[in-house]
Image (cartoon, rainbow, N blue to C red; front, side, top):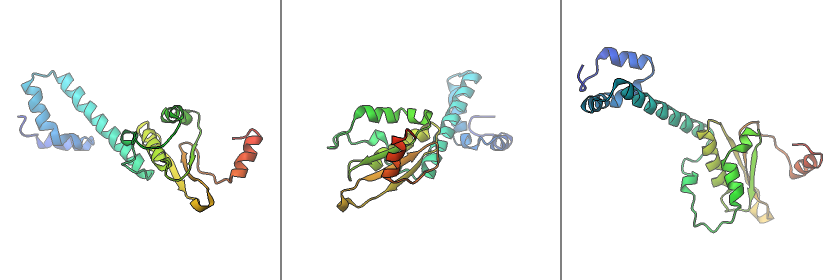
Length: 176
């Protein structure tokens, strides 16, 4: 077998093993491996490592899409020049996803236009990358009443609707 053409038997077996995505670049990879005298184990390691990464990325993208996350709202695209004040330690704590390990949810509150939706989407993307499936929900309240928007992120439990007074009573009783 030359590096120019793959045998039909190899193609069929790879498809049965669900490795068909590798086929697009396999002939070129074989050619490079032959040219560089790459040991078979190193060739296979590189090939399979790339496939694992591709599948992981596809799974992350699928979870983000299923959660309805905006693909443009990533922390990498955060506008550091924006005139928004926030507690950097709190944001770092949220990005660490320790709240997921503690089986907690997050509610992002604030006035209109401060980036709550962006933060919620970006956190959702971080959660998707870690293997979690976020549930995000945006509630909009009337800005003329002076009320804040709220973004709810759940990674562990279904959404429960509660009024602020219900949350306050539960907190006063030491409940979560």
